[in-house]
Image (cartoon, rainbow, N blue to C red; front, side, top):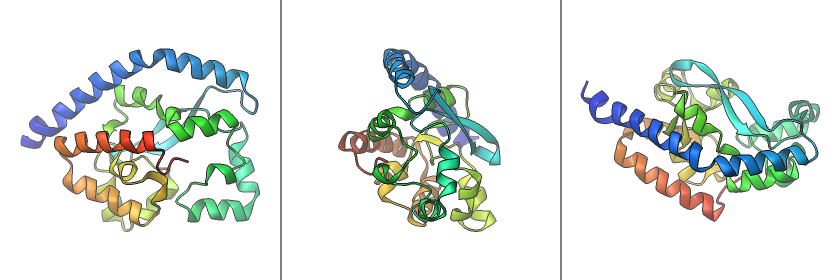
Length: 210
């Protein structure tokens, strides 16, 4: 009850307020990005929705601005060596080596503008402003045994997280898993505000962005 009153409740209120304000403030940017994506080559969609695993193991659709070509999954899996590198590299590829990324997509990823639609995920309650980054189901194995996986899934995933604040894609598994689980152990409002500040700094510096 104490944790609910002094952490979970104010955290949810903050999520609603921040995400609502962000969606309004960034709406002109949403429009500009949408127009640029529609005019660019390689994709016919403005938004990208992907299945992720959220709190309690519940699946949800995470939303991003489209930064890949339409047949991205087929392109990646058609090259077995590239796909293995993708898995070994923490389910990511450097932008310059990733044939799926469009030119505008590379810019969106570098600046993290592709993540802006996740404020909608936060508003409707699938995500929080701060929390471990949501993963696809195949990534759960990186968190270890069932007890560690359930610990990871005990909180809402976040738009921003301790892993991002610590260097984002410069840090792969298994270190990423330890960082995310460390957040679960130490989660509090003070840490959340610290992570938000450090993540904004990391974004402006472009650290680990791909």
